[in-house]
Every structure is written in C-alpha cells, then in structure tokens.
Image 1: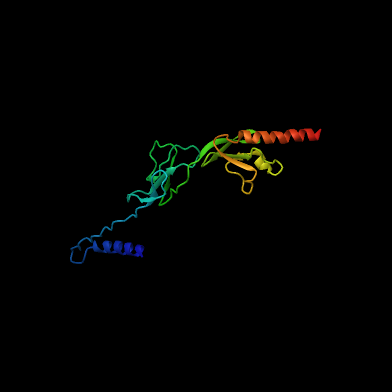
Image 2 (image 1 turned 45 degrees about the vertical axis):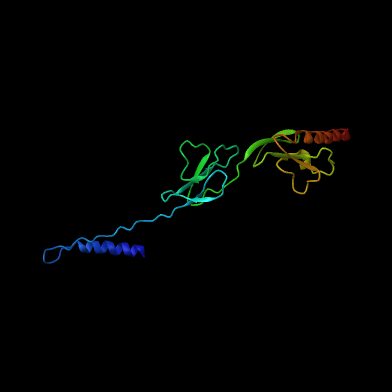
Amino acid sequence: MIKFVILALVVHAAAANTTDISGGSTPDVVVPVVPVVVAAITCITGDADTTAATCEAAVTKCHNPEAKADNKYMEYGCGACEVDAKGCVDCEGADCNTYAAPTVSFKCAENGTEKDCTGVAVGCYGLIKDGDVTLASVKVQKGGCGACPEGEEAECLACEGNMCNGATVAVPVLAVLIGLFFWLQ
C-alpha cells in the first residue's frame, strides 16, 4: 500500500511540472513530509536489577556485562558500551540485555588435586568426615566443585569457600587407595 502511495505522489509531481498548451505551467505540488516515529526500546538497567527501563527514542542498543568469570563490569543499561569499558558488551534491539548472575572462579579439591571451578557461588563438596566410603559414590569420594550431587546428600558434605573440601576428600581417597594397594599384594 505504501509503495502505491509513493508511486502516486511521484507520478502526480511529474505531471504537475508539465507545460500546458497555453504556454503556462502548473504550480509545483508540495509533497508533505511525514515524520517517521521510531518506538523507544526498553533495556534492563542498573547493576543487579531486572527492571526494564524505556530508553530515549534514538537509542537502538542496550549494554550489559560480558558473560565471563570474575568480570568487574556490572552495569546494565541503554545505549552501546562506552569505548573504554572493559567487560562490557552491547546488543541490538529491545530487551536484548537479559540479566545473568555474575560468576567467580575458585578452586576445589577433586581426587586429591586442585581443580579450577567457576560458579555463581564459591562452594565445593566431598565425603563427610566419618562417611562410609562403601556407601558413597566414586564422584562423592573424589570431591568436586559446587553442591553435592543430587541424591547423594547422606554421605556428602557441601562447604563454602576456596578449597574448603581439601582435607575431607584427601584422607578418604587415600585410605581407599592404601587399602586397595594392600589387597592387591
């Protein structure tokens, strides 16, 4: 429909500038200028708020922290990232900067060695202090990053902190290995 209207205006303007038989010309046709209204977009704003705000009409991008561990940039908002903003990424269009919880890097003991981990909270798991090694799964005996595996809470202990499961994992795993060594001889 819009193409037809534009075509009609062009044809009408061309016809209006023709000369008639009497030697006079018809006055020029004034084509009205219709302003284009761009709808304002919404973006999440702030640093941990999931509330969307309406941006200024000319804004077409939103910005947010890059999804990587230990990112110091925490701001969400309207418009592109500032030039020197490390850890910031921008996106095109409304509601494109969805909130994501920041992640941190930490270490946990797994099978007696340090393992690099990332998560929204620092936490590790391992076999409880006086846990029955025969009842615990191999995964719980080894220990690892995050919360206890689902369904294994009886013999598993979750802790908060960097390398918080170091002692609770190393002793039971070593006891199993020593017992296995003597059994094989």
